[in-house]
Amino acid sequence: QVQLVESGGGLVQTGGSLRLSCALSGRTFSSYGIGWFRQAPGKEREFVAHINWGNSNTYHADSVKGRFTISRDNAKKMVYLQMNSLKPEDTAVYSCAARSSGIPVRSISYDYWGQGTQVTVSS
Image (tube, rainbow, N blue to C red; front, side):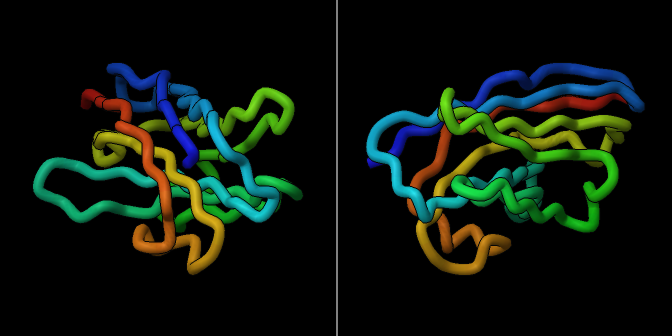
């Protein structure tokens, strides 16, 4: 089992920044990757970013590329999502998730999920 807990969400104005944190605990696999997803009310869950736990290789969705940056601290077992230049359409519940295999952009690939943290961007 892997537990993930998100924090750092909040209310910001358009153009503002937030840094989300994902704290991991429990069993850790060297092959695991960590993804960030978001889901707005009435919308499908959307892939945001992914990082390889071991080597820090990253991939960001086109919708956030250049604005969001995923990173990790292996020693602290933390994954971060730095969100800059926020837009109202970024408003969603953001969740981190862990996978050991599968396609990173597909939510079905992930084995464990956090509870999510709300990000609201006002216009």
